[in-house]
Image 1: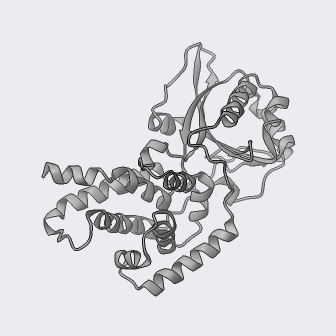
Image 2 (image 1 turned 30 degrees about the horizontal axis):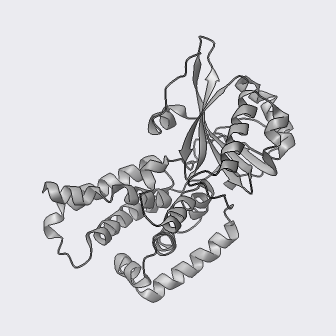
Image 3 (image 1 turned 180 degrees about the horizontal axis):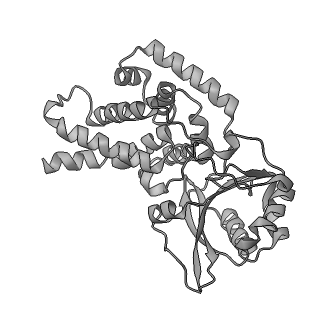
Length: 319
């Protein structure tokens, strides 16, 4: 039985990546995979081997995710809900009825593969913009697109997994592609590993942010760069509004420290805020979208009690 358990466990990371793309939540994805493993372990005696163990696990995981999504779960980013807010009208409004798209550590969802092209696809398809676009698809279309386009399953394999026909799978894939084309998730620069120019960009970002040098910071941002702060629905676009926020309400972040990490296949930073009692306390997980050599988006995830333990980040920094 231990051997069989090990056989199941070796698929955990890729299954978590699949469930994360389906559900948009790191925590729900891990729960779904754990449920999958428990169901599989209990049913091992009935596994007849007519399909591969991997396919069998994906069938179970798909059913777990579809059950969750049928309950009405759909995750969003602030930019999915409203237009950008001019800084003069900016207010921090929580939307407790909204289930927000969540960041995820790369190590939880990106399995080690030998093929660089496959690695690039896996990284690109856990980026926040892509996972946000997936949320616009009906659940079964979402599963079809991920299995066909991300995991490169054959239409016949997907049809068998979903208990449907190849024609139905192809039709669902066509509709899913059309919806994604309308959403047009932003492109991002390849970053595995970072090249010298990307390393220099991130070094300059840290220096500008920690020095609170808005001129240096905006030099690194695209003109239409965005900034969001879940769980608040506020988001900003463009240099003027981002700087206006940073020098207004955001002025409390002056003197902060950044610690590098990675999230969603993208560069990220743990943001520590000056603590009046000394040292630096967790403030946000910042996930950057980088394309064409500049930063196109900054997502500040403020619920540090959830994110910092998930990313194995220190609970504070010394002075």
